Length: 61
Image (cartoon, rainbow, N blue to C red):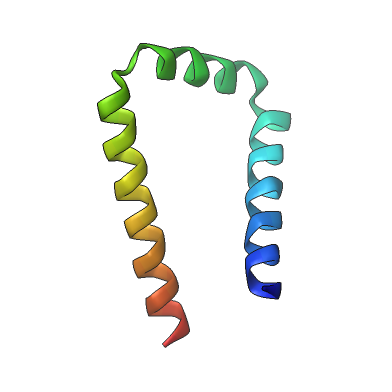
């Protein structure tokens, strides 16, 4: 549970830094995301999740 909490905290740190350093760029990315079909976002999310699982597995073995 501690590792999960650490991972979620790091996600917040990374996102926070991106919004702090590039607020206009992040707004543009969010606006573009609204134009992407839901199925494409779903596939991209699944690919990202799978990549994350593989990376965690590689780092933890």
